[in-house]
Length: 276
Image (cartoon, rainbow, N blue to C red; front, side):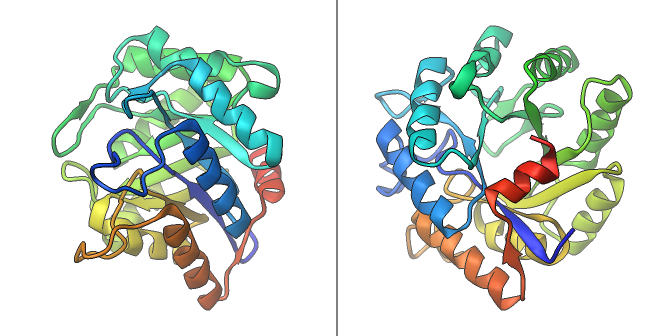
């Protein structure tokens, strides 16, 4: 790897609303606008979540199609990923609908959470059967899985899927730290988790809530990059005195990377790294 980092941008997620932070992009046009702004800063990948007209998360492929079409109309290089999250939607047909898109609307990547877990107020159920079905369909659609890891056992399960030929190299992992029931944002956790990754792995660090900035800094220093955006944290500071914008969050990471003498991978370069 060169002395560069990947910026994986997560604009919206499933939790923040306008009530939480009036900067939260929830409409199709707002999400597209934030993606294009942050792509100009250096974001090469986007982890998309769709919202309906009431700001609620939705699995509907029609809304994902609007997002993908609107972004690609103005930027056809940025890597677009969609969410198959089990946090709100439990049925396979719901969770996999977004990867049914074809042609110019087909996503480059799709998230794959590798085990069940608890967030602070909600569970995310990912049964072995569901994970295998999602991974198999993602593979059949020739989409790259965005492997979501909250603990070391999830890495071990990814190795099981690799052994079955369901996930193919190069592997892309998001390691998410600081969730209340999972691995914390400490150097020891990062060392353990990164040491467990299989060969041909590319990994970025994310932090939940107050742990976002410190996790991102460690991702710049020791990993292949960061996952950054209002999905994981909608405050700019740990004291929670200033609400964040996506532009500010990404700009700060770019500035820190440059201060640490790291450059930013372009979307074209990341496509090559991941064989997209």
